[in-house]
Amino acid sequence: MNASLPCSDPVCRTVAGVPSSLLPLRLRVVVQPAGSPLGEDAFTSDFHPDLIGAVVVKGRQDEPLVLTRHLAATWQVPPARLWDDALAALSVEPLEVRSFAMPGTRTDAYSVTGMGWPGAAHMFRLERALGRRLPLGALVIVTDDNSFVALPLDSGATPHVVSALWELNETLGRRARKPLPPRLLWVRGWDVRDLGAGTVDGRFTAEIPQALRAGLAQLN
Image 1 (cartoon, rainbow, N blue to C red):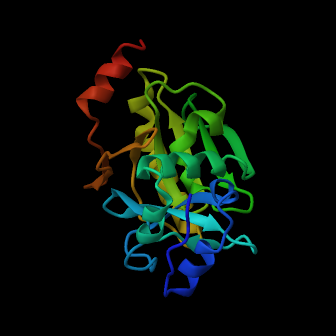
Image 2 (tube, rainbow, N blue to C red):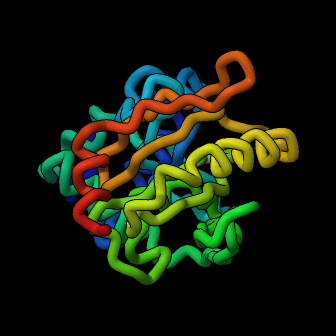
């Protein structure tokens, strides 16, 4: 990486001053609400209408320093590689992972919370975070920038407990200090799909994609 491009923005200049040998180890990913003040040229991915992922650099005081695209362009590293490197570096951050039975069901879900660095971006590395294979990924509710709940998709019965997951989402959202927009996501690696969950006339509704239904049917 070559971070020689001068930047007028103080944060960008700070990132440019990080030794190139340390940059791969200092990259991180954070999840923020869409419209967060990250600047006009932040290295972001709009993976959802209400949420964005951003590649940042971990500063000396553990603060997230926004990475600009014009600075990243001088590193001669493909954008996809930067995302992968940032996610790999994120793996060193401590997490609290707890399994629990979904209310009123026998299905286990996992709560994931960052223990220092914001933990929501670990949703993109679910298999490693949860320590189990997830061929179909998981259903995920992101509580805030530090926490999420994942329901592994490993049983054809999973769709029957989705409403319980949504109710849990609403409960956790009321407790969160800065809750993110309530969304139910199907996450497989970097692939994120919104299931359009909500409550209509007092009844829970969600749009389960045919690809997901077919995959779950094969697990029975």
